[in-house]
Image (cartoon, rainbow, N blue to C red):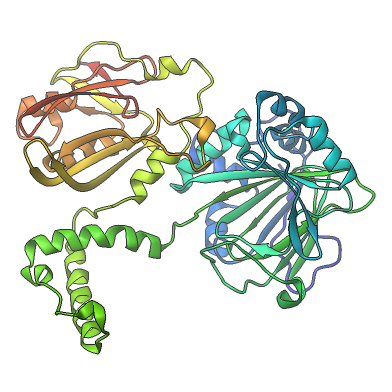
Length: 484
């Protein structure tokens, strides 16, 4: 595909323009996105920008605008979500607030025009046409298969939840006031055109959403118009606003977002509790009581004492082999999309097949949907305590509740800590013999590889944990085997 870089926008840029690329249409039919792997998907997603260039020059740093002249890609983008899709979606049963917001930007403020209860298409279309209201559709990947396919691969690529919202705005209208978000944002223009203005962040890499008054944000640093097939990226904290130009058809774009609460600060908060817990077991100083009445009065001596503890934790962290994770890994596994699968999902998870032996070779399928973590364990039946390896997965997750704030279940297994090396062997190998697993006895090796591989990779594990013979059905740790 020929590539040609050119100045961006419509001549209204003020300050340095974001990186932009014009991509000519390819000759002959071609797949617009590469779904062979998560990295392949992202590379095609931001094409022709190279992945290395993107993360070196743009990610968390500055906007990137890719303007493409590719009718095939524009047609593909248009298929992701159209204004006309709303009629059928309304017939499925969607609700104001939960699924749809109807809003306008009035004098720099967001005015919500939602009704109560279920959304009816005729009323929705009337507000769109007569009130020039923007329709914001929440998490369309719940309904649109191709967005599910894209976002599932992006979650594998980033190792972070990926949500989306569709915005449909009539001509001469604006839905939202200037604001910034707490997520990394990728905009895909699907239908019509959208005029964008970006501003210098007041809070770089912001941790929360905030509306900004127009008299505080100054002049735009970038100004341009997106057309179908174009892509825009900007970091969290980037102030932005967008409107549909007068005299044109409506605009539809999808905002794909990721990396909410995924900073080093978040990761530190997640690991520090487990680190303190483990250190306190080994160091009596952390188990000693705080001074009397400390909670009633401040003391400068406390800061000195805490600084000493933090230095001690830092020293311990240097020698820690497995970082404890309190919530982040588990939350990611619990709340992410299940694998994209258009067949009978029962076949994806159904157990069956023969049991492998020591001479069998096993491999892990859907590795991108499995996470390993170490955490505390207590058996209330016998007060057994200690650290365990937890293996969480997402094959049983529900697509229809993705990113909707619903309570979710966790799926997976727990293993004795002594199984960690063997689990990592399976994790890191394309295939491995059961007899080569790093476990003490042949029985342990067979217990770890004792499963029924289903048609798509379902599992039934049988293992011994601290003397308890446990049978656990696992749908997300799909191993397949072959016997030599």
